Image 1 (cartoon, rainbow, N blue to C red):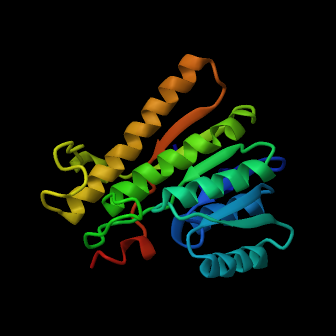
Image 2 (cartoon, one colour):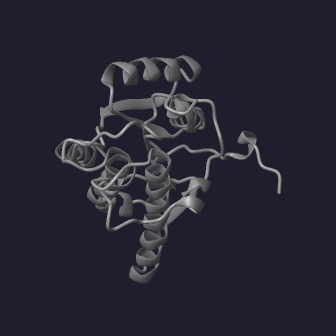
Length: 218
């Protein structure tokens, strides 16, 4: 079934939060939804780059309701601070798009000591989503979208080396993180259905793109 951006319906009255929305797929998503009338919150790690992206978005959609919050998924204390800020200013969140992520960097660790890809792509988003859940559930038929990848086909949750303390392969760690995202998407949806909530949890493979995500991949 063919589908294009023209098929995206009106988004007036909806509040949408997109993580990692200063570049790539996240920026394109935030821009389109703002053009369609949504109130868009851009959650970005780098405030300067986020402000530049916000200016670009407003240039393409002058009437857009768009704002910026700082979100560093590699620091769980800052994840909590951002979630508290969003919960305080938003009556509800209709769509939460967990887009931010890292792809195949050299071995690094988050502030809390986790392998960077798993800590950012999986644990950071898991914590952020859980903290925002009450606000998400206040919106009728809300949705949480987890950006995964077909890289999950090669993924395996290696509990004996989850934190890359017994060796690190950047592709293996990326695939593991994308499998983790998809597992969270499925399990969250199962629990939402079991609770009788009208919200849904969705996993998506966005396809290959030429963006900053692949800066570590020649």
